[in-house]
Length: 236
Image (cartoon, rainbow, N blue to C red; front, side):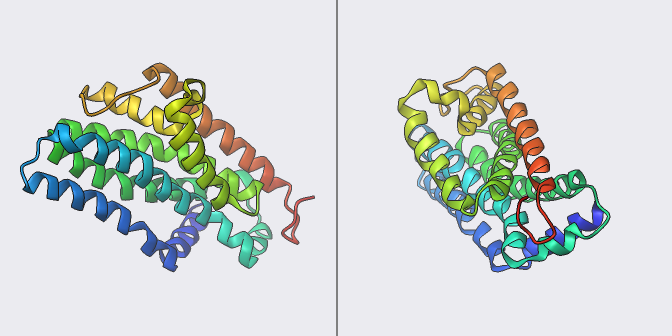
């Protein structure tokens, strides 16, 4: 399992895909720093930067890049066949890749969100945002990792989920929020550090329970799906 994790990390950060992880976090930090430098009140920019950019764009897009990349690229280039010939349980392969994806996503997103929270309010707000980003990293990467095994176009479907389900329906249709990871993250952050900059739409208990369900269900589905792959790289 550790060997698979090392190979996954090396493949993820050794590709050009890794460079795609930097612009959005830097943009988030840059905007927060500019607003703070001009001495703007956080009420004027905090919600737009933290929620509108951090939780709605940076976190899910980074998770999409990483979650679909840790396995999707191996499916495309045939490397998966080599891995499947090894005496490794399908569960161990998925869990190793999931751990790498979570760590990469959490580190890349929690640091800029902490900085944004620090500039917008306090260190406590920064810690709350960072911890919420870690929780979101688990749910998002499990979901996108599963998509990479269920479809040949996981990035497209992932963008549909982010832009349409969360970005459009999640904001205007209340019934869809129970399946919005973005709303879970906002609720968790608001519970850890109540602030007017965050406007949670679901209860924190719902957020926690649904986040856990996302992780468990998506991981189980991914394990079962990988188990259906033949050595030719196709599902049986």
